[in-house]
Image 1 (cartoon, rainbow, N blue to C red):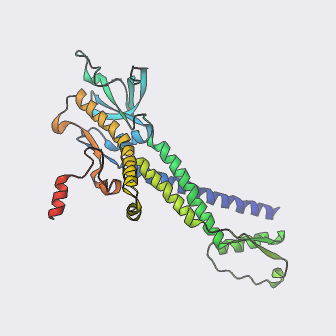
Image 2 (tube, rainbow, N blue to C red):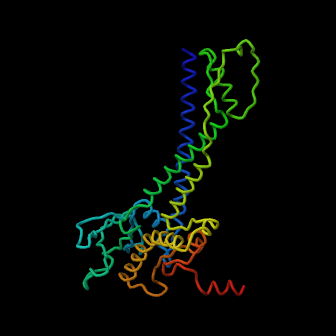
Image 3 (cartoon, rainbow, N blue to C red):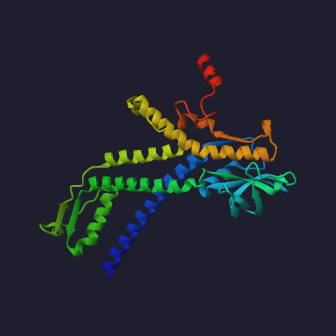
Length: 322
């Protein structure tokens, strides 16, 4: 009975250790992608009472947010959810703007539904992560799961190269061999000197002949990682691979990357336009959003088809003269 409990305890601990690594692997990928997604866009001229990080988190996790003017604080950004009916453009007529300590009902400003006798502060701007208001987090969770499966499969395959055998022993020697194998698996040298227990037939080893597939799994993992970057609108073609692409292939890849990026940039731009129009903000007071300039080399090496996203000609002139 005691031996059975010990075996069960060992198996439970091994399962727990494996589950911990599984979770850490999955959440590590998820956190990496989240940091990239939250750093992609730079909001320009936001009032000090507004917070761009909270705004991007709302868009990342919820798919939408709201711009409004609070009677006490001034301009703020909050979480948002639909309220009221849908209009003829399938847009909510009202929006619940909420956050910690904030819960306000506002009319959804569409650029044409503010009458002369209405107060702009009764309206808000619905900010969309994309035109469907789909959270980025959902897609990142799926990608992270696929990478977690590949990464843990690689770990298992590497271990199979280290111990490509199944050891069979007498039931009375199971715990002894388990302890010895744990030392071996932990890269510890061990010496076992009981020759009576090592006689012929007591211990047998069966070869598993596990194939080495780490290289194939690494390639597949890179493909999935590149798919994530393409989804986020980030150029992920290595220089050596770019040389092998013909002009048509390179153009198609660049267009796909830019369209994915545009799907997130355009709704943000539209929210800025409506906000500036609603509150009559012009010049240096008008808010805007752009792809973060210090991420340019990561996001796009080639000329972009997105207006205002390509390199600044003045910067290129300075570089040439420098």
